[in-house]
Amino acid sequence: MAGREREREERAQPERGRRKFTPRRKRCVLCIDGIDVVDYKQVGFLRNFLTTRGKIKPRHKTGTCGKHQRRLAVAIKRARHLALLPYTAEHIRRYQ
Image (tube, rainbow, N blue to C red; front, top):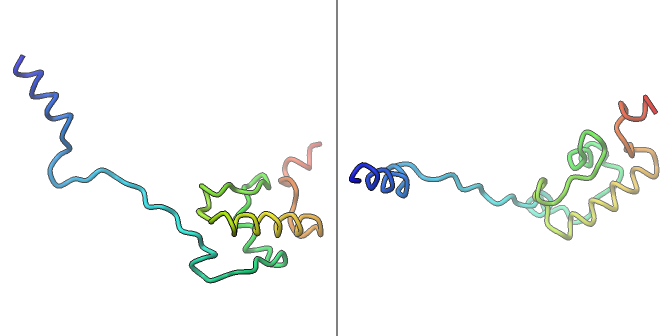
């Protein structure tokens, strides 16, 4: 019985000197840089917020705040409408 009690104690307490990993909260890149207006003509910047399939990345992946996520979505949709950004990935369009 003493062996089982010792195992429980070891599992309950993390080793001394080691801390559990706590991920840092992602900060909004646009707020940090002081960018207020998201321009649809900055295609290279907008590509950072798209997946490889052409979808808009969600907030919890990019770390943007709600205000800037909405502005990013509008800018990406405008760039898509003007054919500056693709609606879908090229390898998907090729075979359909």
